[in-house]
Image (cartoon, rainbow, N blue to C red):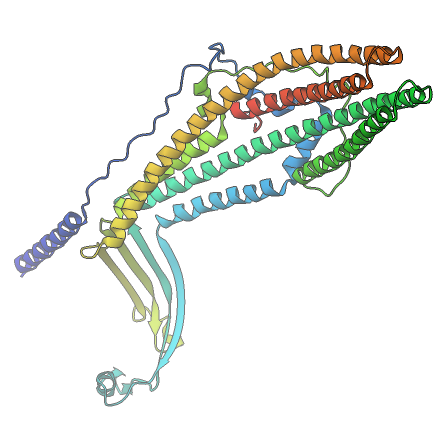
Length: 483
């Protein structure tokens, strides 16, 4: 008898293994080749020394020296709505890690139930109950009630590491969301600094136009006196008046630009319109700090957007493994233990009311696996897409730094020449007026000189602004501003 049972067990075990082997063989799928990402970058930036000193490692509080600007950035990091939305996304990604971690642990549930059932007498169940007694001389109650309480458990064995890879992918997606938040901080710091410097430049333009307007008003009075003395014509008076009116109109345009720029900063800071405290004095003479670009390979560590793309790429690689694991059979275990009886008072009568179960199953796709194949191919395509996006981000980062470094050098040379131009035109204003008074120059020369002088002064203000913006942009491009 024992030999027969042992033989039956061997047959069942062999049958189980053959079924498992069949499922695995039928689940096999050919690997798709997805190339590795190319992270190679040039050894240095053009016309820049190969030096590991990098401005990106400087904290933004130390990079900016204007206390008003630092205060604005501080407020924005607390109140900016878009950043706060991103922080919630980071929290959601963190919660997803806990959810994925729980999926490869056993699920245990507690249950309790009660039901009542009346079966027909001329049915199989009815006939059985009619001829069976619960105890001697005690028939089944009609209707039949059923009460139960107990625990049930289910567990999917993570043989193919599908669930663990899902958890790892969730961790990588969380890290990517953190880097996304850091990149948003970098953009926010940069945008506030840019708007602040634009606002200060507008203040200086407004001051410059006002000063030039006073010069033109004085020149207009002089031309009117010249006309009264019959030394010039009404045409000269009208031309000077038109020039004064043009600059008065330009004042209102600048004031509107100042209001809009202030409100842009207020929006970034997360508050309703109010005056922006700022220091607009000595803007032209504001020193421009030098920038250390480091070496291009440091971009991979310093720029949050590159690290985010790297984490996202790593997550897509795991998602490909997860999609591949769907071809393999899943192995599950289910178990339960509890108490069950047709009357509540019998629930505590053990072992008579004790019930338990233990079952295992293997489920694998055999036929019509098109949806799984499509999901696997999609995962491979997304991985390749992430490779291209990562490589594109690296190339874009390098070009951003190269462009801004070149811009800094060219703006410095342009500023030096414009400074000489302003000095020359300032002297020519006085000279043209003296010549006009002595009838040795036409009024058109005075107007042209004043217009050129104003344009050159505005241009040098804009060049100084562009220099400051270029410094902020290269700081951002190198990966600074988030720490």
